[in-house]
Image (cartoon, rainbow, N blue to C red; front, side, top):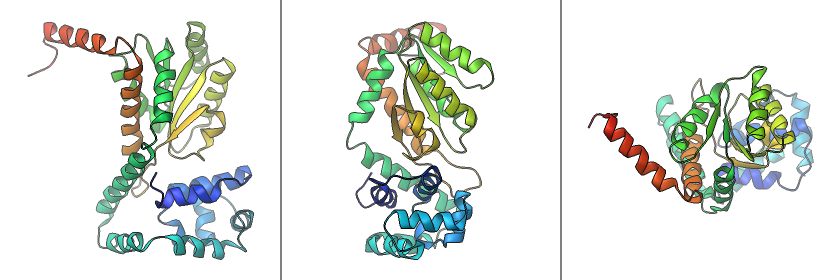
Length: 282
């Protein structure tokens, strides 16, 4: 993330503080709506985070401020002039344009985060080494998991998509672990199903290393993930938009392919089979 992005400033503000689960929920909510938070009242933030107004006040005090007004004033003061100018410009956009502009900012944050490629490269090595490779994504995250699994199967010898919950989910995780899996990739997007957190806890108990793509380091699944790589989601429309998590999934695919010695050969073999079958229209 860029050093002066709203989400980055918030995350630095939270670092080093021992937050309660309720306070982590507030922090998570603030990171998700980083550009709007400096303009919210304590009551509005409490409603957005699903907590009480006194909890917001205690949260601000835990961060070292006299109260929430002091925290909000700090967030406004540290925003650079260019960012404040952008906020004024956004007022001229209609709601659909604002949603697109929000996703553009999310992609900027993702690009800046990738300036340090080591977390993604580590994840790529973990995913490449896991045979089979279970890929989990339920509800809102199911399309992210399915897209990753579709492309991953072209370069990885055994990808197992887990996009349906229920009592058999733990069985399928156990089956993957029993077949030799060493890692599990999870796409976790809000609202977070309780079942996902339970599945990740089960996977860790089964000996799998959990790599998670989530919208924030403060997402509820962070505590049951071994390596969490954040990619923000858009919240400007009735339903969240997830361009950054989708793109991060493709970046992870690239990192995994780089760690697979026979990835190129597998791709070429697939292309040859597709051509022989006339699979695609030219």
